[in-house]
Image (cartoon, rainbow, N blue to C red; front, top):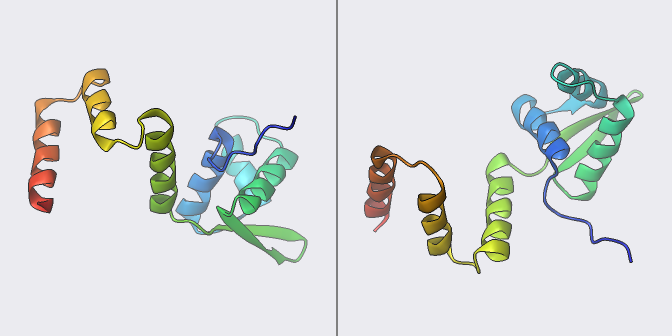
Length: 125
């Protein structure tokens, strides 16, 4: 049986989206060159991942000559919200409280960070 396609971003797709969010739009060639600065990346791999991003409705494209120019459809904030919702639902039973407790137990939050969070909570009430 075929595996269900994930709506979440893979690491490679995330890297491409970071470029699109930063630049506003980019060709497959530009994306490949930017990714290759840190790790050798094949043009065809980037081309495939860009097509997948369009299928997932994270990005869209227009044609300019022979080049495909990709641009983000979702903002970075919208993508974060979707990822957070998935995380909450999948691992924390839709409970922000459980997530917060987990973060406090498993990370090295400093007292100043907790105080800043408390201030944000107080400000929203």
